[in-house]
Length: 439
Image 1 (cartoon, rainbow, N blue to C red):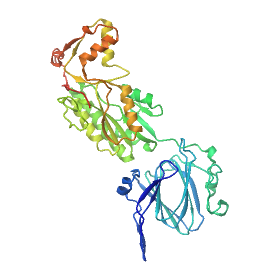
Image 2: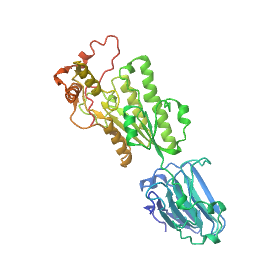
Image 3: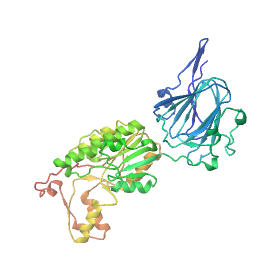
Image 4: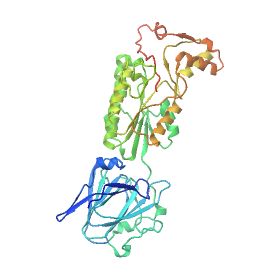
């Protein structure tokens, strides 16, 4: 009688034990050893295996481990039986936690990166199989633990002094001397921008690159990085000169940064099973609706909006993506509020458009929203992230900026967008959405 496929948690966070249906008769048995759709539906991470390895052992008592590799493993027994032992060697509160069980062909176990794996054969002719989600490399970061470590105190069925074990495994360090495997890192692209600086403040352990460190428009730059040490890329880089994008030079630059570079990002994420966060804009919409939902279709008015919409479409092809749309960003650097307050101090009485409505987004709020998405187990997909409050026009925001700086808000004069750009002359001006408010 075959068991049902089940998945259960263990004492080690992220280590999952599976019971596999095994169908047998007088000819032998058959099982689905790996069935992505069924297993993922029951809670197994979709870990994208790329290599299959088999360890064959002739005799009872062969003992191997404890090895923690920098990749995830799906382990099963093809023939024979084993006593398996797993030790958490990842940095964190669960470091040193142990899980042991006996396994035959009716079981499998999912072992995340950094959890040490060991086993002892209980029957002759035992085949122990691994599916892993990175290709083996001698340069990878490995972590080892001594099989006889007194702290974890694994109760081996067959004493270690009477089994077949390698000298190398016997020479591994005790737990007190093990350097825990550090988590994969988050990469922030556009680190010197307003949002990039806010993100690196909240994510001090993230790798932060700007154009000087990494040219995201270059395919060779993407190919040169060892992505095995990363699990997330936050793309806070973009070409954002809305009017400049209407010029021949600006159009090419906008498409290069906002689309072609995003293609390289998406390809990398898919190839290496990375999560990406891509920051987009209200300019992907035409602004005819008073509020924009995450389901609204693209209808950009200008070149900048067109390139952001195209980048969004690329990002949506990545299985593990967060597409974050925002509006009217204000942060550490040149921004509208600072400009208004500088003009107030200089005695300038500005004219500001009153027929564009939206919500400000402070980079501190936007960065926190991104961190919350990454740490809150939110479903992948599209999210709107803005600061709170009621929608206002740029004119109303300018008045508030004057008042906050101790100046008379009546010095700000409201004008229409058409009036504001009437004196632009030959300068190319991009059309603006009338309503930029994101739900």
